[in-house]
Amino acid sequence: MTTVSRILGRAALILSLATVAACGGGGGPSYDPESPEGQAFEYRHAVMLVAGVKQEFINNMAREQVELDEAAFAQAAIELAVLTAMMPGTFENQTLVAESLTEPSVWEEWDDFEARMDGAIEATAALAEAVLNGGFAEAQPLVVASYGTFSNCSGCHNSYRRSDDED
Ligand code: HEC
Image 1: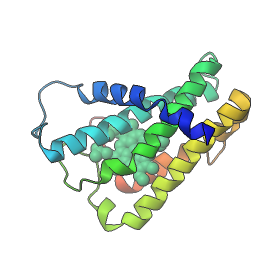
Image 2 (image 1 turned 90 degrees about the vertical axis):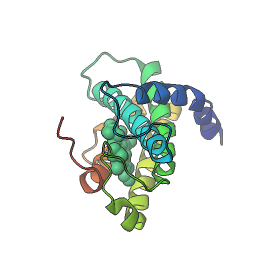
Image 3 (image 1 turned 135 degrees about the vertical axis):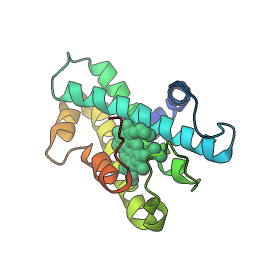
Image 4 (image 1 turned 60 degrees about the vertical axis):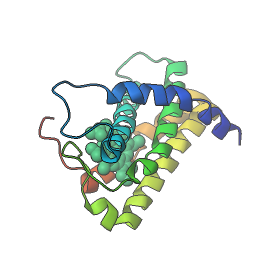
């Protein structure tokens, strides 16, 4: 499938962005960054964090709050589809560190969690597909719809992500 190979071509770029995201913050973490649980958290956190940046960019452009840049929009949509496809693998390690916002119930209710993941993967792939086939005009309605692309993200966060006291 051509879309998939184009998306996979972005993976190296995404991973380098994720590594940068994982290095932020001062004060030092509560965990050993070299430990399996530390690595698992930093990987998950980086993928989610970069996905959040892409989400905000896509949302602002689709809602016409920033100037339209069709090429940048398409790139962000493709990158978000790649990042979302990476998300399930970031929950393979089931240990949690203090900084993690993951509810332990993720692994007790894995079927439901996985179904929500699949929904988000499908929705972001559909967005990338739309932008590749029909450009911004075809993708915009998917984002701004009342149950739009990102309702899949917030739906899971409402159930499985603890609220961050600092936000
Ligand atoms: C099936 C569940 C699920 C889906 C779908 C999901 N997330 Fe998350 N997300 C989580 C969990 C759990 C965390 C907390 C991760 C942690 O801290 O361990 C999280 C954290 C985040 C964070 C905060 C950064 C962090 O790690 O603290 C952002 C931003 C984010 N997600 C963006 C997104 C976006 C954008 C999408 C949709 C494209 C999405 N997520 C889809 C479960 C999900």
